[in-house]
Figure 1 (cartoon, rainbow, N blue to C red):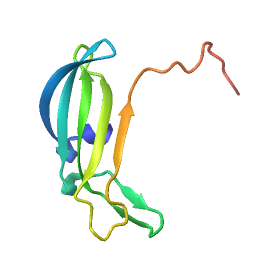
Figure 2: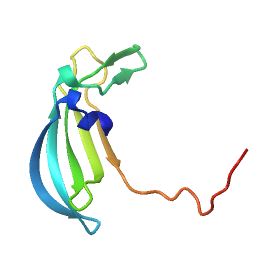
Figure 3: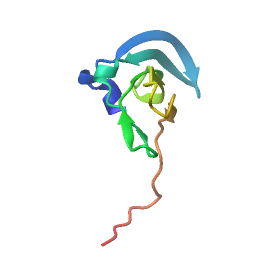
Length: 106
């Protein structure tokens, strides 16, 4: 998420629509990141080669808190000689309870 919103990535955002997701009003944006600005590293473990491809995606943002709720990304124009032809990822963000008591371990 940090790379997507970092100024150096020069992400091109385009407002798509408002949507209701899990009773939350969200602003949905399509986005695109050019290869020259990409920091998304895709590794092919069989050849030990990696690429940083251009990618597109969509992001859902809570309009009342500006909290990111979901990011979907898909590689674009992968090199022809690279074994992996496409990569897609989706991440849902939410608050998570990490316990019910404050226990200190030494």
